[in-house]
Image 1 (cartoon, rainbow, N blue to C red):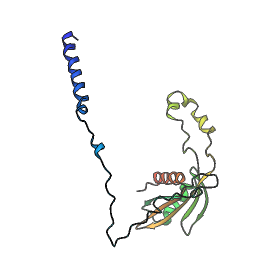
Image 2: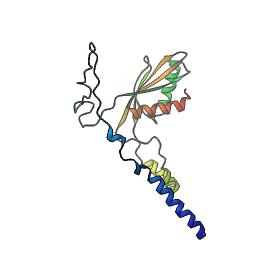
Image 3: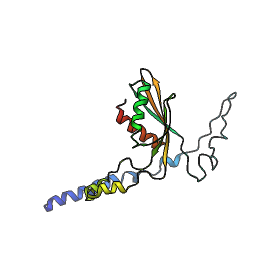
Image 4: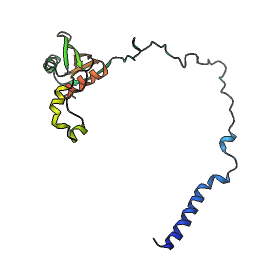
Length: 194
């Protein structure tokens, strides 16, 4: 740049900084300093004041926790709708669950159209991560998938039931959040549901 441009830019920059920073320098009192406490609201005669004794109740230490101190989550319920009749949907779901990749069918009730499933914990697929695939980990990916445990620390318990819904059927899963999510997502993708 030329010296003339510096001679114009530097004073203009200094002037703009001075103008922007000097806005508050001319006020002597702040509005928040003048604030005063207002009188509390008065309840008209004939009306009751609401009880505030239970407004902030702190629960007991043991409420909502198991013996180890871990918070116990309430069972989660999720589902989807199929166009099949309940008997046909129950049969199709049974065939899909018999593959065993989601977990083990612990029990079933043909009259109530329900399955009790022990859903495997852990990764649903044995693929290595993004960086491992990008930077040479793909060479041993088959061996790594065999070495990786298919379940970690037990299984999720999920109850899957098929109920009539209009002209089709509704599939509802209830149990542990992760197990319900895995079962519902897998069945939706395999059965082409709404």
